[in-house]
Length: 102
Image (cartoon, rainbow, N blue to C red):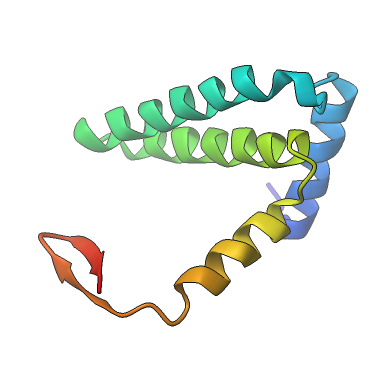
């Protein structure tokens, strides 16, 4: 299986979601529920130490988040860029495996 670039994967997800009629902004609430559902599956895979299920859960979470950003009139790049600019200079420390900002 050929590895695609992240940009190409976003285009593919957009095209797939558009073909299915999922880009409609009126679906934002149900799409957010789908994001949480997929994230829960990833959490379950971590707790059960099931790497294959984790890959699937994280991949599905990416797909649902990409669709959610598009439903909100954003691109995934805009959302990630905004988050990056917010955290890039953040100071803090790791406590029990969690980054705590100052």
